[in-house]
Image 1 (spheres, rainbow, N blue to C red):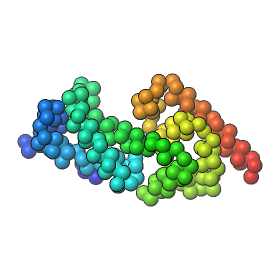
Image 2: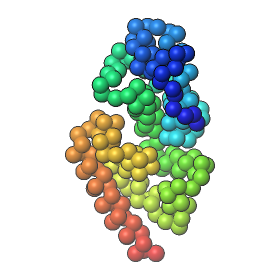
Image 3: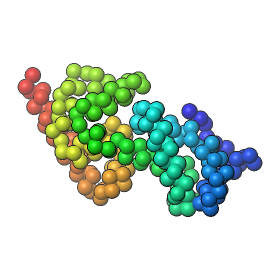
Image 4: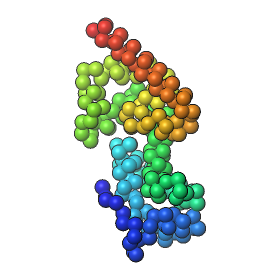
Length: 195
């Protein structure tokens, strides 16, 4: 939506300075931080959630979190925008993890919402004749395996990001993904054989 925010602007202090002032309770710094970053962070939220109302709510929750945890920001670990983006991304993914996304009907609703923005590889697959078979095979996966597969392939999370988001060891997450993919492959080959 917007390009990079100038860091050396006399009107707008660098983001790390705004975060430091937010940590001290400076509401004007928080307002400036919001003005400088909300458009980009909203686009991150919208890209994951695909619904403006949800993206707005997640953005609001994220900024509350940024305000309360500004003192935790460490410039030696990440750039300010990277830190804030990870907060928004985690909030959006938490939103998707809510129980109503565990059912098949909501899985199909999620697919339909994602189809609205143009056809990517996932959307093309879901529109193909194999979509029904894939949905049925995903239903057969356990909750954690299904969730891990959906977050990895529908939202592009890496193994490391999955481990952090799900608060599980990296090896466990890799096992869930590997076994889930094996079960999907077996299920899909059975579906193909039965046609």
